[in-house]
Image (cartoon, rainbow, N blue to C red):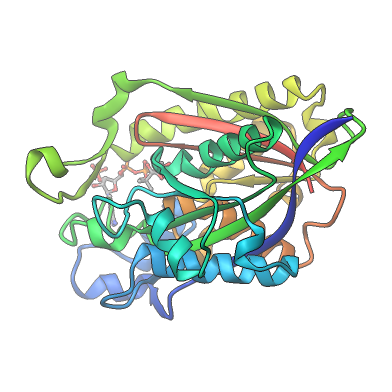
Length: 323
Ligand code: UT7
């Protein structure tokens, strides 16, 4: 038997304020048509004044607990993937712990920008497999609206805010690739590409900074690296793209999502797409898509899912799991 990390609950939270593409036409030299055709994005949610990453993360986690029929003190650990925590420290994860009323276990953040949720899932799976935790709440939550340069049309129209959560539970499975739970992961980074996507500020440089991106360069790396990391993770699980029920990709650009599916030989009918409604929510995009995909009735128990993401670092990776 093999101890696997199985998803037993999902939840998500999107801030109330919805901003349609057309709203940017008033302040920027852009159009709804450009944003839609180049990125697939139609609208995004922005957090309210005073609404923070840990507020959204806690709401998503509360919904995942309710979905699983469990309470906060049934959980051993919280892992929050974010690049936009409320404060420099403590971690957003410990703030979520307190907001949930959880008085046991441990909590920490993972920072791998848009690949953050894939990194967090991989870490949570290892905590469960090693016996250090039996239930882990894995959350992706971001307020990228706080690091936008609102005069830069090439970035500020692309990002949004939100949070998604998965509750993972240790379950003994037969030890084959038909098991439920996380079956394989693949993580990568290459710090030589720092200048393609970064925030030009931080604690040790005395500023908060704004997101800077050479979009077309990141696009080139994404198309090349995402199908490759997904196939590597599938290979590690002893599976292939033909076995996949759903690709649940990082939601940055519909053209990247289409290109990755095509490279993997899969139809867009096998892809959960939310980019039109959420924009790019960085580490929150995959758990948001998983939770929405389940609510839509797309993702069902037993389905084989591959998630993949790339972002600042560059950092990229994939996780193969059976729902
Ligand atoms: O989540 C982390 C990973 N990030 C990504 O995966 C993002 C990857 N990149 C992308 O999604 C795309 O590269 C973008 C959507 C950012 C841009 O699309 P593109 O087809 O690569 O366009 P481009 O950057 O090559 O720019 C084409 C033109 C430029 O004008 P010129 O130089 O051709 O005259 C830009 O100045 O589009 C212009 N442009 C805009 N025009 C209207 C850039 N932003 C805008 C805008 N409205 N908002």
